[in-house]
Length: 347
Image (tube, rainbow, N blue to C red; front, side):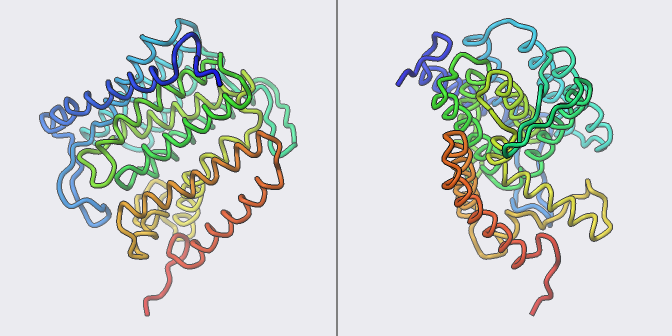
């Protein structure tokens, strides 16, 4: 098998970005303490002591190094750099002093628009489960903006346990890279960014896996969501991602959690942006799983959804559908037995 991407060795790309991110964490921890960017414990959070929350800067630093060492100068990449910088700076400011949700949402739209309208990264057509949807260009662009902003907030929303957000994001990057290798689509910008992001995220995850020594903060989770969406849009351009079903399957857990969080808050007449302690990972913790076991269980579920996406790409739909049905029944069982949607009366 060919392990060369754009004239660079895959292992080298992952290892170098891993090391840069890993060592940058020590600097970001000191900076977080110095400027007071600490996540303070409260009744909604799992951690018991103040935690530095700028680990996302280490991921971003690994990404920048990876781009300088292995990327190329082109309009799409410039738009991604500008958009990612805006997202990281917004998250950094929010980690230091919380910003109103509506202002964060507006800035996220601006960053998404830069990628879509300047970088010309948007859906040409949308294929889902064999159905093809063709819309006018402007509709495709607006849907792409919505897709980017949605991914940013979905990934941000699951960042509630040590190692959860970084782990799920790493699974996404690995899966897209595997699909690219299976399809022999190794020359696309999406693949090189997957490998760069994988190394950068894993370098941080070493410090963040339970028990975490620091958090990535909004500057990290929103950046990961942004890059996940960007890589998906790039994948559509070079046919690494042949259907919208692929990113939806790989991101099934954060999509599931986000959808039920919105529905739960609507049902209980609360603001959609209001935080709570009823997310999927909170339900597993209530089942007496430890933090580490909860994270590992979610990893396994996410990996299985990723396997479904790979079988889907290979055309083995019977296996894909079989695994998918089992996983959906499992998730629905969790919904029925826990407080993720409706609160159960305590016995």
